[in-house]
Figure 1 (cartoon, rainbow over the protein chains, first blue to last red):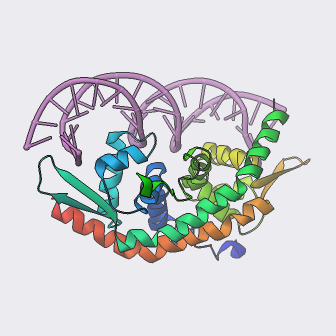
Figure 2: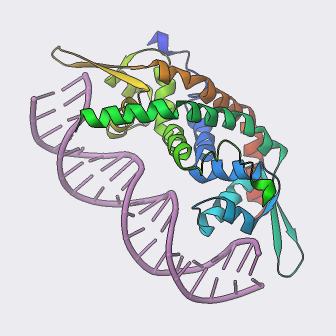
Figure 3: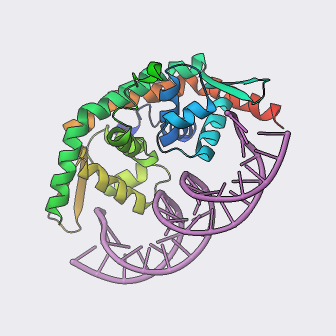
Length: 125
Length: 125
DNA sequence: CAGAATCCTTAGGGATACTG
DNA sequence: CAGTATCCCTAAGGATTCTG
């Protein structure tokens, strides 16, 4: 097993800590929320409108987690009706480049993946 | 809404196609499987041993999907007992750099995220 | 050895209704 | 407006057993 000792970074420690973070980041809604917030601070209702298909419940949960992780800031304005704005923190913004790298990969390989799937499905039908 | 028109790549089309791929790639086990296979071709049982915590069922499913997407090749040797080896395809290898970028981000920000969480939890307790 | 099949439990997440 | 609180249901996924 000697040759497998030099585990790559994704596996990291035993996978534990890093895996937990990747799980959180890679989450369907988290990615979309961060990507949407890249366009600037935005209030709750706007986020809800601009993230297609997200439920109000999941938007709330996603934002809470991002806030907890220090990736998003939440600002409440003492008005009525209430206004709450969300924005990426510096930490949050630092996530954009690697996230984009992955997105770019997905875009570039979209065609080949789709073709591979079609071929696979046709073969096993 | 004009200023939100220039949607970032992660959101892509309407999020549809790209999101589906990101969902697949970002999957907990997929990431780990690809990372493990980066170390070279490996048979089923070795993968099972080297991916901590994965069940045989999930390993099978993950490998099937990766094979379907053309990211992993599956080679069956006509022996008894049977031997099956998995390896990254060229497509699969191309995923490594962006995946590493994300992993590196997770490693680098692990401390700050953890600190932020602790602070958040202490605050709301 | 490399899975396929079955069973079973949990949790992710939608829909809806209510509140400060 | 910006959530919180419930209910409810599906599907992800673990444990176990069977097979070529």
